[in-house]
Image 1 (cartoon, protein in one colour):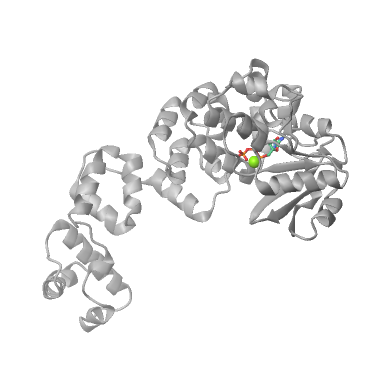
Image 2 (cartoon, rainbow, N blue to C red):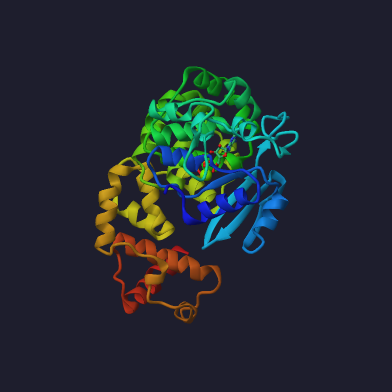
Length: 381
Ligand code: ATP
Ligand code: MG
C-alpha cells in the first residue's frame, strides 16, 4: 500500500462517518514520482469540528483551525487533515479575503498552486487528476493550475515555490507559467521574509539550483539586487551552510536585502561578518592565526567565503595545533592581578600575549609568558 497505516485508518474512518477524504498535495506528487512521502496531507468534506469529534479518541491539535486544518496524532505520526476549502478573492498578493469551507474536492484542488501538487488519491489508491499533474510529472513540467498570471499575482510566494520545485526536481516551467513567474516578480516585496526565507534556503541548496538560477536570474535579482551567475556558481560550490550560501547570494547587495529575510540573529551576524571581513590577497600564517584567535572555528567559514585558496593552509595549521585562543594561555585572572594588571589591562595583556604567541615570540609556558609580559607589555601600554 502507498499510504501509512495511520493515513489508511483516517481515510477509512472519515468515509465510514459519511465524509469523503483524500490524500492530497505533496504526498500524491511523491507517490506518483515513486518516492515515499515524508508526510501526508488529507483533505476532507468534514468540517474542522466534525474532524475533531470523529478523532476525539486521539490527540488532536488545532494547527490552523482558521484555515480549516487540524493535526491528528496516531501511532506517533502527525497527519494534517484540512476541510475542503476555497480561497475566495485575494487582496494584497498574500492573503485571501475569505476562506470558505465545505466546498467540493474540485474547488479545493483548483486553488492549489501547480498541477503536480493538485492531485488527490482515495483510500484505494485511485488518482483524481483534474489538471493532468501526472502527465506534467512525466514530462518534468511545472505548470500553474488555472490562469498563471492570476495565480502568481494572487500569492507571489508561489513564484518561489515554483523555483523551488524546479531546482529540487529538475523540472522546467511551461511557457506561460514561466512568463507569469517573471512578470510578477516585483510582488515578492509584498511577501513576508519569514515565508520567503524557507523557500530561498531550499532553492540555494537544491541539486538543480544552478540551472534554475540561470533561467530565473531576474527573480533572483529582485531578492538580491547584485546577484549574478557568478554568485550562483559560488553558491553551488558551497556545501550545505545556510549563512555561507546566503552571504554569497547577498554579496555587494544593499544591507536592506539581508534585513528583508528576517533571519535568526546567529545567522544574520554570521552573514554580516562574512560580508565585511577583509582578507589579505596573499596567504599569510600570521593572519590566519589571528583570525582563529578572534573568531575561532568560524574563521574557517570566512576563509572559505573570501579566500578559498587559503583553506589548505588553514587546515594544516589547525592540524598542527598552531591555533591559539585565550583559553590556551596557562595564566589565570589572579596571575594577571598579581602582576598588577586591573580591569581592561587584563584583557589587553591576554590580547598582547596572543599576538606574541601567533608571531612565535614566546612559548606557551607559564614562566615564559610571565617573563614576556613583564619585559614587554608595560613598555607598549
Ligand atoms: P513539500 O514536499 O515541501 O512538503 P508540498 O507541495 O507538500 O511540498 P506544502 O507547503 O506542504 O508543500 O503544501 C501542501 C500543498 O498545499 C501543496 O502541495 C499545494 O497543493 C498546496 N499549497 C501550499 N502552498 C500553496 C500556495 N502558496 N498556493 C497554493 N497552494 C499551495
Ligand atoms: Mg508537504
